[in-house]
Image 1: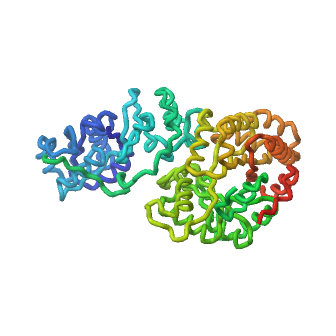
Image 2: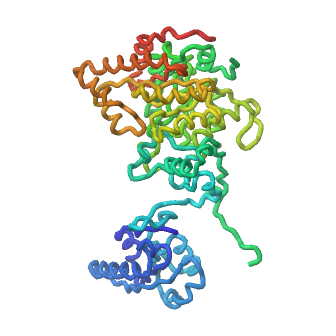
Image 3: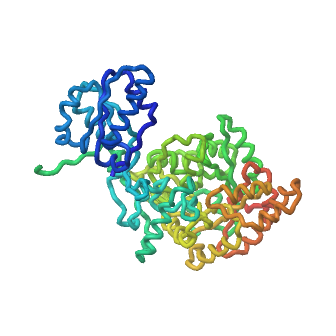
Length: 220
Length: 310
């Protein structure tokens, strides 16, 4: 799923403080799972902004709301009138949702309340970790199911580098060495012979490097 | 043995001599005088001088330009190239540029992560990894082609090396990883600084067992300790560095003003012991900001005078 983190409150305030009316708008799927951008978080953020407005003596009418997903048209139906009557929107969606709102409402300012941080998983203890960079050409089949593109700080395809120490990455003791994990998995799978095969030079044209990507279902 | 380049290092190694290389870091300045001076300090005692490429991710005068400065002085530089800062277009371009100046050797590296350097907010590139850079340099030289498939009119003839760290984890893949670098096309290997000689020899046993020492020239890295403080720092803070407690104790047992001398002696003893290790083809002496000590180490280790190979 897509993981995001709320921007520092002061940064959010600076973006929106000059409006007379603002809708704080949640997105209740991915970013709700990480408790940063769901409809509940929109309600809390709206309250905080109202308090700040009162403290600063600024007159803004702030309402809150939200939908299940800000990246698909049908979900916007339930919020149609709310958004059409808004002067500006503070979206708690990921960057996709913010842009979706921007393109849908051409003349309405929309601001991001979150920094979209990564594509990751839910570790279960309130922690979320990056697992994919959507590079467009998945090699998990040859790396024991561990992604070096997203999990190795140097995205090395033939690792580990010389900085792997006690299973950790040279840049931080909090980061697992992805290639230690690859080796552990290959061993568990009885596939260590695979380790010595050189991973070929990657075609990055399928990544961000090749420009914005899209695909269209045939006959849809 | 067949020679593929004009590299002095290649000639020394393939003529069966123990090779000696060293390295110098370029200045954080547009004035190259410092690196030229460093080069002259050691030129008669080594077969080639590696020029580091923005080492520790700190911005410096570029490796290629520094190599050209040394070449202009009649010295034999080896171009270090990290894949952190340049994509395959720039890397191939710099290889051509190096060859055009008669730079004959190169070392392919990943590069320290930018978070260690002076621009931690920079983007990193890693279009290729270090093994793929080895493949690239060999492909350009031996097939006379760019990675994109086009012919190179005059291919760059560089002797291609790689680094190896026998002390990083996991230890049991360190021999297979060397095999992989050889398969990629590495012709010589300069290792991480060797302090734990037992562990290095254990790694070399695995190397020799697979006959890898007959496919690549292995040059252990030797870095003299200047003080017990440096030893402790390297043990504690440098990832992938194995500094045994006995070495720290030995330096601690010597008065502060004699520790540097003791460090040199330890380096000399290490070389003397590793000379006897099957598969060791030479030494890469990295006296960090202490280049003036390289001649003494080379002489005391019995590696001087250097062979004439031209």
